[in-house]
Amino acid sequence: MSAEPAGVALIGSGSASPETVLTNQDLSDVVETSDEWIRSRTGIGERHVLSPEQGLKDIAALAGQRALAAAGVDASEIDLVLLATSSPDDLFGSAAQVQGELGASRAIAFDITAACSGFLVGLVTAAQFIRTGTYRKVLLIGADILSRWTDWGDRRTCVLFGDGAGAVVLTAHDTDNLLGFELRSDGTMNGCLTLPYQGSPNAIHPKANVAKGTYAPIQMNGREVYRFAAKRVPEIVEKALFHADITVEQVDWLLLHQANQRILDAVASRLKIPGEKVISNLAKYGNTSAASIPLALDEAIRDGRVKPGDIVASSGFGAGLTWGSAVFRWGI
Ligand code: ACO
Image (cartoon, rainbow, N blue to C red; front, top):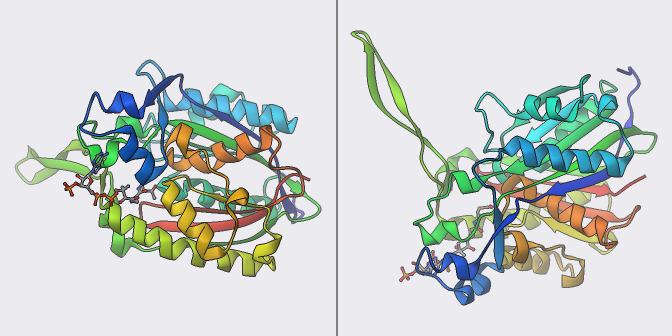
């Protein structure tokens, strides 16, 4: 632990995807849909789904391990493990299991639940701990297994989601490479996208009724979510760019939560960012919720598109409703 305030740098990334791949064609065996419908409405071609023998902690730890290796940081150096997820193996939290799996023995670990904005909220949270000098090295993982909570009989939602994990390592640094951010929530619109607990009364005592139940599958008003994202995401990216004192022209990469290609295109067009600067891997993974931003970032870093020094404008948005944007310079 250090007492000195510091800047923040993002220095390594990793990701992990389950082996099983479900194509649009495969889904057309399960519900009445087609490759043409799914591709043209969403840009999704296939998605990965986790087998029941594996847990969230397995792919989260693998992504974390790969990020640590890329950063050249040993697990024992990590002060804080943040796990952004809405589908933990354990409702008490899965971050500590991941911390244990990784051997990050000095680290405090906790979960962050903010659905598809989870990685963005985690990034800003990590940065605050580093900026105040409380911690020097943070492993931030975004991971979700929404296949557990998808209604596989509902064609309006089951074609959208996939499972995966992505991670980045953040470190204290003499310059601050988190250039600007902005986070927002609007709980009045919560009903647009939910994974609600549903219980029925269970009389445990003559004077006490408690709820007994479980979580119901994902429910979504697709049109409302589309309208929300197309309006709020460009606004918040502009705010984060303003805080960062960065112009749209200076942005090397637009890295949005991978919800839907049509949302990516609409946001890029509103911001006047050309298609070649927009990172998209929806075709291969679908919407992996909290994993989607670090998964897409990791791919773009590993294939050489995103290079150290590049400026990335990122935005997460989703259930809550919650949305946010962070502008950062990749690497040191
Ligand atoms: N295959 C074939 N037909 C379908 C499918 C499908 N998979 N899904 C819906 N349809 C049908 C509907 O039944 C409906 O038919 P009907 O008119 O006979 O009733 C028709 O297509 C139109 O349905 P809508 O729900 O109105 O479809 P829409 O054009 O709005 O597209 C979509 C749906 C792609 C979900 C769109 O609303 C959207 O892009 N929304 C954004 C939401 C999103 O991306 N959510 C991801 C999770 S949230 C997040 O990460 C932020």
